[in-house]
Image (cartoon, rainbow, N blue to C red):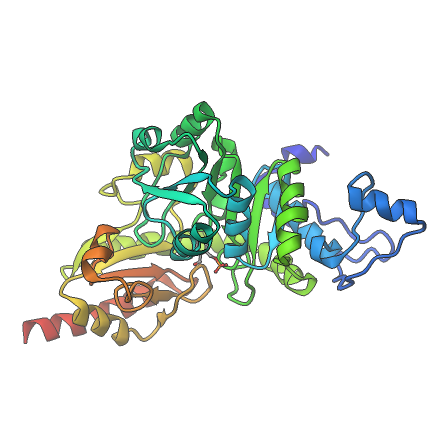
Length: 400
Ligand SMILES: Cc1ncc(COP(=O)(O)O)c(C=O)c1O
């Protein structure tokens, strides 16, 4: 059988997960070992030097984690993958693999808050320069390039406004300029979008979200060419101690088996929710790439297999109405995460972006009524009914 021709649903179940050679157990066992023994000092030296296959110390790799890494590399069509302790560990490691003191990175304007914080505090402290640029127009990237630019970093769809960036076009710019393109693919998961196939050089994920999919593991992934991943493993992740442990890798391997089914349901539920919100009189604006009115709709159709499970929208009225709406929800839970089986909602103006002044927030499209909804796996009608009853409460309060 030609495994190279397997479709993605078959790859998810079987790729890189063959039964144990001794016991024939189908589910891989957890290997918690930190230390590994060697027949000779020469063998140990060769494994550390990378001249022989093997694992030598838990901070630089683990057999259970390696299985997961192989699987993620396969799903993202990359040579190799690295599993780390969080999405932020993946993002910081990927950026540090390209940048040193005095280097510059060009970053998409509406990037995840943790990435923004890493760049503006830690990276700045070690002398890494950055500029936030509107990457919806690739010409802005050309114009923003400096002689010391060593990487381009984008996120698409973005968090929370679901801005869509044309990966293929931006990859053309990055190739022309000879700098690597890093793409945060968290919102799509490897099931819906594969940036390496579109010309990107490095893909990062918060595996905490759709990849694990059950809200019980923090993890991150980087997928790239084997040499770059090896360097990150030994010189950044290993030295900073950002490795994922075997127990959590096991949970992710387990969670991954249903990713295709989960993503299908997240997408179909999100579509129904977006269509409901788009016609509701109490909603000012809906951000969902599946709607024809979304400015990135055509690019989304070109590079994404489906539109994902996140719908952002603006409730009419100010901050108080926004809070009233979110506090009135009975099924959707107020939470900072996304990609879980439960429907989760967050109100950036009073939660993640509350410390930023209103005018500053507006520059990034964070209005007082903006909500980010991570549509879960419940029945779509129950989710819609919940939104409807909460919107009614806002409506009544506004007309009083
Ligand atoms: C797009 C995106 N990238 C990265 C991260 C960071 O992931 P983690 O919380 O696993 O560090 C998040 C978290 O919400 C995210 O939404």
